[in-house]
Image 1: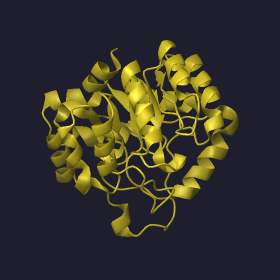
Image 2: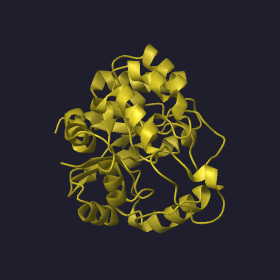
Image 3: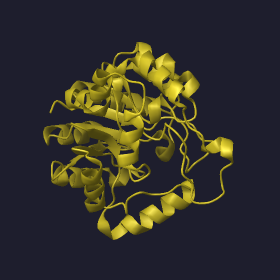
Image 4: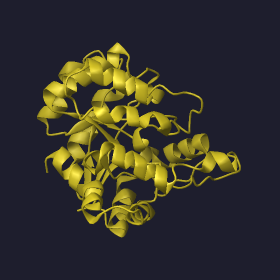
Length: 278
């Protein structure tokens, strides 16, 4: 079973506009049109059995409505939806309880888009509550290409958060921290911290000449494997950040790595099955 743990979609009425805006800000290509239907098409083509959609609340007022969509749509076809939370949402406890009772498995947090550091008390209390409710927290980690120079979710911040909250399962996206991979092994000692593989291996595919050649490089195969070994394959989750990654190509890239069959099975889906309890 192959599970893409980190994908994004938008409602049909805003998908085209959202993709155009985000692609322009980040200067990178989108591989789907942003709709749930096109993500399903991509998943079928790539052999992905389940894609986990990770909605981001950039405004606290939007939290309930976004979660309503996740509750309504999760489990349809090949898509599973997480909920969202914003650090400035006042009723976070009740809202987290509501989505947990509805069967949602976790939430997405995005410190850069939400303009708060990961180790801020407002995130710590959300993470603490997630731990109590059994909700997974998938967290954007490292630099966001759409907002260069802003890093509010570093490995050091994740360590400080992990030391202050209960045993919540934290998934640090982008192999633990996009463009700050040298510090990622610091997190490996915390057994409740996982990493996902999105936007981390090979080269960024730009849509223009905004980036220099050195800026396009992500992790080499050897550095990628080093991080896998630091965490062990038991805490690495396959992910693409679709539409910003091509699912078929990302699966092929993972399969080319010098990993054992057991490690591949765990990374491509086994770990996610266990974490999601499906």
